[in-house]
Length: 363
View 1: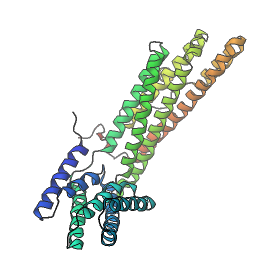
View 2: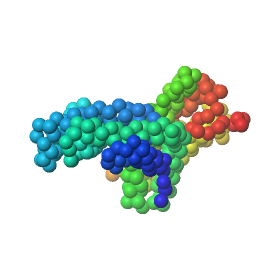
View 3: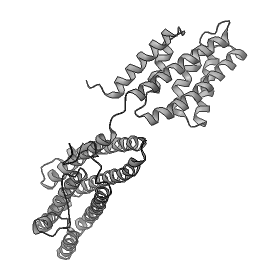
View 4: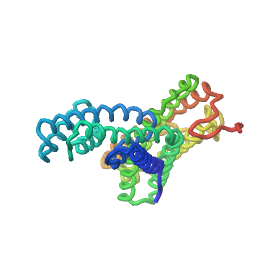
């Protein structure tokens, strides 16, 4: 079992909330622990926003709980009705994430009101806010993970998986249903990658000199993700058209497979180039040219073979048109990524870290 930073922070926040509540002799410290669980966030910025929203939601919950107890009592039906109203107001205010804590506040205040009900309600409200504050302190003290490094590593992991399946598919050594399942899994990973990018985007920069570098990094990583999505789209088209491709003439198959291999090789180089570990320039040498995607060669071979096909094979040719189009779009994204990488490194030569790794020549 792997214990991540989020799990560790949750445990520490609960412990801190319970200790503080017991030290202040607050009634029912368990509510502070519950509130701390809901208030833990993956980043400092989200934690800051969460505290503001939690205060609003708890004030709303406490106000309605106090009013309904004073007017109608604490019958279970009344508690349920109060909860419904509080949920509706939170949704209206677009602070849905705070609904669990607001409902905890309602139940904590309405469950067993005594003679000094107002004082009791304020104590319960304070106990819950103490839990929220404890979580905020933990979020500040325990710095969030380096999302830049995690983002790069995840992009590299997904692209390597796509490259592997492209190579296996073009060599006809993978079952159709197996690859279909892998494609669905990669889609899920890309959805998580988008969430990781948002967390990285939300990281605050407190020094002016780093803000421009962060802005360019955001553009760079966004294009890396876009290029990864286009590589997956090419894999999907290749998977969908594998039978049609294998029925094409051998020369055409060889041309298409070679260009696919060259393109994913180019993509692999770009992933390394982001870290400054490789250098891709205009292909002036024959060896370099061999690894440069040639869209003209693909289109020319594609069109020339279309003229030689019989009527039955024409349907396969039309199906493969989408694959060729996807390959060209994919390469255009890679070319744009290459431009962005060059731009970043030209503007930030003195930036000693990218994707959490030191460049060459740095201690």
